[in-house]
Image (tube, rainbow, N blue to C red):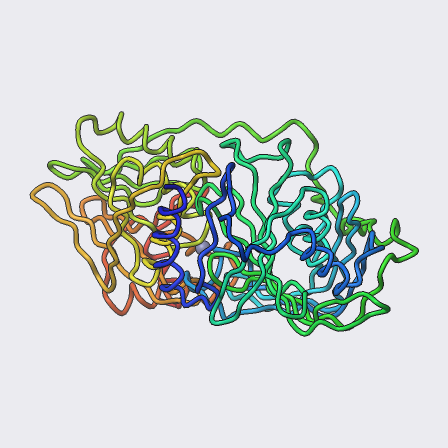
Length: 498
Ligand SMILES: [Zn+2]
């Protein structure tokens, strides 16, 4: 049953996203995976031995490789467009990664020269991905187990089963293994890893799933091609990691060494950059500030104490704009709305834009049955994400209702009017701001005004030009990221000299 639900939901999502690897959907993560008994079922041990031999991994305990890498600009779910492919990439030069297969542990370093989300000029920076042996979460360790060498090590450690599958017309022998019984998801399920072995006995792609509060059973895939021999060990010339249906990170390998002599040095992370702002001291996560509500006008409230949400009360329902930066914050906002406006259902939850810190709080509202209103450009991705099974979290699959909007969309009854304006810009192609005439308010996310005397970023300028060109009327300029002082329409227009 689990498998059927997963297949039914995964296949449309994959087709929607144009993923080229969806020809044969993988099984759901499952505690009791039983391979189909078949006369043609390959012998898993024989397959594994062939793969180890083809990789030259018989005596491999560690490996280091280098070249250039790339990553999507910013990070997953912080991209200018919601659905893949994500075209904006930043190069990582002097990339080197070292993996100790027995610890297991991994360190990757490199140099970046990247632009941020607010379109400011690119700056030099450092890339570091450090997974020391004490980071045992699957979300970290999968970065090791998905590599060709990590995959075979995991198969040796945990035992594997074998089957045959055809993907996009190519037949693969699939070796599958599961995490140890001591390493399980919140649901108690073990994690599944599948390696797709080509006719050359080399892994062409390796996949797993990890629990994610927004993405559910989050599918992570690494794709390999162009294996070359480096001193007896085969290393793919190109590596690409895909999440959410698209490539997010890749490497072009130009050099590699098996069992490097200086392993300890290679696994020692560089010191943090000089200057203030080092890692904070211990003490656990800070206590969230108390949730408070402020009435802007009759039936219009701001919920503060974290990412700010706006609440508009209609005659028989409520609309909420923004759901907070985490599932916990979303739940606190939802609870506060129920106290503020008892007895009226939350019919609409409006998402300003699809970046992860503006979508993480949506899940409690989807559970509540609210319709998610978002820009049309975000609908495919958000529907895929919110429809994905949540077996690793131990939660039922959500049943999201989505409504895509564009241009100006008005929600209005006898008591309330809320306008949603789509504002094209370079931060995201799926951005909505809310105008509430009765509160003389424009409410927005991420269009943060510059500090006094500083130049506005090009992103803020797009909103100022939009407001000016369309004569959008309001007085108060309010933000999901609360400003320390009240802000106004006049201050927004000042950024374009009006
Ligand atoms: Zn954003």
